[in-house]
Amino acid sequence: MKLIIIKIAAYKEKDAVMTGISELGLITFRVPGLYSPKSKFASINNPLSIIEPTFNESKRSKHYILQEASLLYSPMQGDLDFNYVTAISILLQATNNLVEDDDKPLLYQDLFGALLALKNKIDPYLVSLKFLISLMNKTGYELNVNGCIRCGGKKDIVAFSFLEGGFICRNCMTSDDKNDLELDEMKVFRNVYLYNGYAFEGEKYNQKIVVSTLKKINIFISDAYGYSIKDIINL
Image 1 (tube, rainbow, N blue to C red):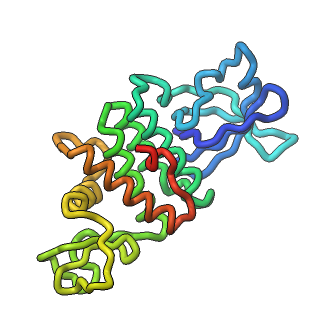
Image 2: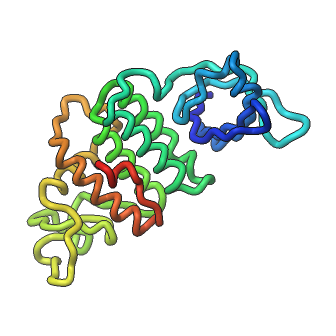
């Protein structure tokens, strides 16, 4: 079983309680001696680390106890430039603050794919955008990028509405409608939405347009989910 750590909290003097997601669900477990100077678990003390754990069951609490852990990925490995660190923070904030605990396992495959892409030096903001689009689709805000959300037409698309969840054509556009994305942003949004996975091999995107699209999706997230991702605001 592969487990992505999403939360770490101190417990008693030197222990910690970690929460992780896997394909099997959400798992909370105690890590004995994590904060001891010679802890054998020191390498996994970073949120979004991916591990293969071995657990014992505790007779005194509801938590599993970590016995062994193989570190498969650490977000602290590689080149820790600003863009990479920002993307790691975006993924973590989105996972912990936009999704209820019961639904967090739905994000496992996307989170795993996003972290692998960051490890392989895919554009961090492209990865972040793909992750947020997938998160919205899986948590009640399903989006449609295959035609006008009102009439189904595929020609003369002129606007995008996050509230309605898709594109709007010229015939359906009214003076009261607000356009949430510019034309270049709509193209990026659709291409990222339809791309299968996170590798983006051979794909080239204007980073300024990707970032501006991220900022606009974050405005909608703030309104819809009641939480604004701070690292996107500061881009």
